[in-house]
Amino acid sequence: MRLNAFLARAGIASRRGADELIKSGRVTVNGEAGQLNTVVGAHDLVAVDGEEVARQRLRYVLLHKPAGVVTTARDPQGRPTVVELVPAEPRVVPVGRLDADTTGALLLTNDGQLAHRLAHPRYGVEKTYVTDVEGDPGEDVLRRLRQGVELDDGPTAPARARRLGRGRVELVLHEGRKHQVKRMLAAVGHPVTRLHRSAYAGLTLEGLEPAEWRELEPSEVELLRTG
Image (cartoon, rainbow, N blue to C red):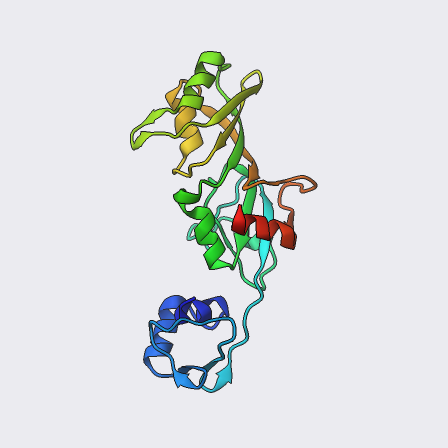
């Protein structure tokens, strides 16, 4: 990873602050002055003002996000954030977003490479949503959701859709557009009244009550990296 990202992950400074440290000549890599384009590997020794920088342990946390909590590290309006629900050290940040009123599976990590992979559209990470809607969608509506719905930013990719009960639909998507589930269901005439993400990238909320979290098993992390 780049030197500024290494310093930020270690909690030394923000990336912008790390850039200033590097430009001022206060950062060395293996005894040589670090540069803005320096890449740090697993065995490189990084120091700031001569003090070795300890590598931060990578952490992967699955949170059952409750309603009313915002998916961000800080909120200017003072609302509770998902970061406040998990241990402060080592610091983790959410992968992607869920609306404040949306509940369900949310991954938080300090592994920037994995977070980028999971968020990139090219990898098509699977997300499962259970939604309560106005009215009771029939098979024709489910067929439209499966085939793709025309939105103002273009048609959605095919999705899996099934009826779970009166006014309740499960959607499985491989896209991550803003407010996508709410927009899709509004477009087919059934606005969302409640939205819950029951699974993310194969991770379910089994055993987790709202606001509870757990660390991922090594095998789960490996599946995220290779799946």
